Image 1 (cartoon, rainbow, N blue to C red):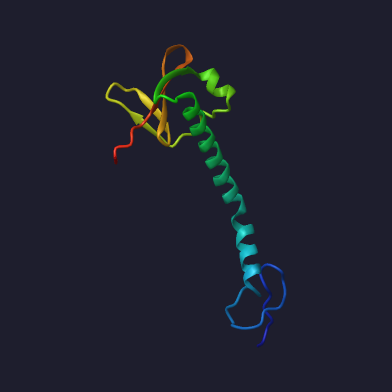
Image 2: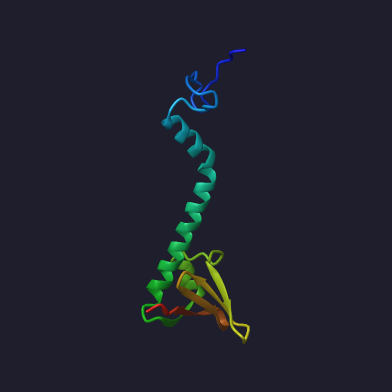
Length: 121
């Protein structure tokens, strides 16, 4: 029985190997890009938020250790829901890191901003 196979992307008839799914590389790439586009968008958006958060902390903390307020960070566009890790001290203080920069919540909506020193040098 000889049935025609059709490209999964454009629907054209496929010629060649029996297990071929696409008529060319462009159709294969387009199909896979469409399949993965929503997850790529999510990842790209989260990475943009993390980069913005890092940039804000870098801007507010040029000396490597300073205090600021939650409000100042929010005005600049900081999103407190996104960070890369949490470091908890023996005294139960929790530093929220965004790459090498971190904030430690203090009293009265104040924050201590710190920069992790590079230990590899």
